[in-house]
Image (cartoon, rainbow, N blue to C red; front, side, top):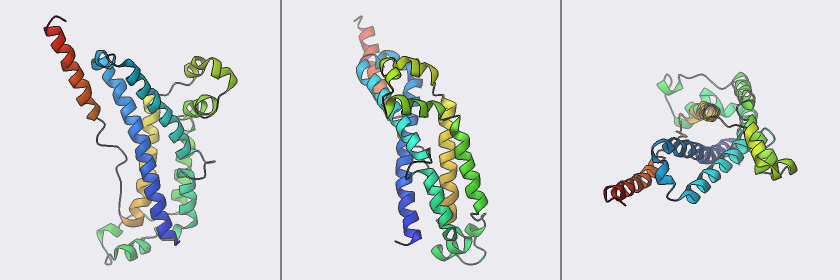
Length: 220
């Protein structure tokens, strides 16, 4: 398979998995935020909502590690290695050929991909180590493998590996920027990783809320 076709397939697969991770992150955050005004509604089915939050967190931990760990066979580090190996397909001339743009076209006015671009993005991934430290710890000691100590006392692990909203936001930002950088130079396309249907769950919570309010009005 030629490098251009390989890149397009790699990009499509990476996009799918990034959206999967970002969807889990956004829904996880959204449900926690809605506890402020819809906790009573969630407590109508606490087993369901607790399991949903637990499943989302598991997915966040596993997928973040898979996408950013340099030892994984695929993911962002290997994506950058593929781009470095085939850097000629990211030249402005290659973009012009693929899209048949005339000389001076607006879409050709962009910075080309260089080895420096790739080194910068590798550094950005390495700099996420602090942000994903808690995720890596949970993944290695509990979610992907059972560590004997934390298997019997999981709360000890969770107490020392707090996952912060700001860390998740930084992870998403870096993935989005790296994805757009190479995709835009390849064929002018950029993709939104953030899902558009996270608020759908509010319809369910609002129905439950109206049910609760109706019972209150009836004195039940």
